[in-house]
Length: 221
Image (cartoon, rainbow, N blue to C red; front, side, top):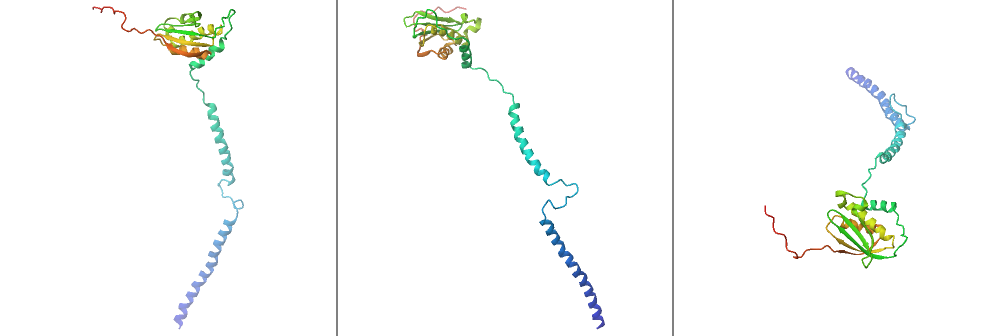
């Protein structure tokens, strides 16, 4: 019996500490739940930790700064001017020189525009329906010299100069007749249309040999 009592007593002593520890362990989760229930503002801030409101306030500022930077980029970009087109060049010339009605105007509304485009020059002459000359111009008269006389830009200036002379006499509509293989064929026609003349028809009257004259004898080398 004595041995049994001795064995039982240590079991009771061991049970007491376990019972005492249990309430302490139960209280710990309760404290954690209370701390989690508290709002973020009431919780004590840890040392060295950034405030909770700082990042929230910084985000809108950063978001507002991004559109400003994006808007500033197009302003900084330098616009490269494009090369002037033929239509723009024609428009500037038309604005620079106004068409003034001649003193002794012939009042001819329709006529014929003859364009001679060779490899070295461009000539434009505008006549009435019977062939009487009203206005004419060449690349040399406009101010071109040398190889520049055969360019398409020279043909534009020539057609404009001849058209202004004809429009001063009341010319409004023309029939275009083109002769020659030069580079100013198309540019001269476009210049006539751009300056304000109505083109009714366009004809190609370039002479073509058709087995007519006897060719020269072959060169001996």
